Length: 170
Image 1 (cartoon, rainbow, N blue to C red):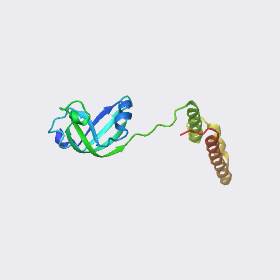
Image 2: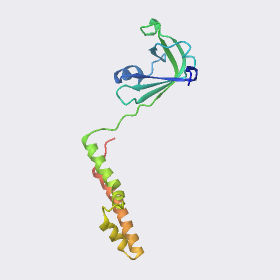
Image 3: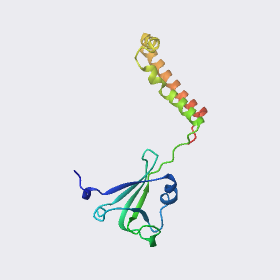
Image 4: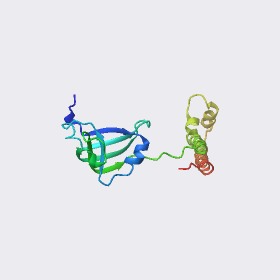
């Protein structure tokens, strides 16, 4: 069993509104938080991670902790018994999600169908027995290779057309 002396980081949650207001842009004094922490337990803490509530625990920021101090009223906090930390470095983990719209959904669906259709076609599980029999029935190897290369080129052309006529808005 691990003791608290082995733990070098702690994770805490925030709402998106608080993230926008307090975390997205670092404070000038690099102070953050108000936590009820035991004095002995904070000695080994070197990192802090923030995750968004109601987001599937998406971690949005990492802090390298320089030191802890009592939060106090003079530091814009409201409980002098709690601890805040001063960080030396912060790193954003938040990634903006791509534009979730109906046109993007349609474009993505068309693109994925075009992209993965050859794998479905080549799947040898009695779906396309006529196609497989046709390819295997071509006795001249060079003709069979030309047919396969033609299908690959058609597939690449379909990918290009899908990308042109069903573009995704990132």
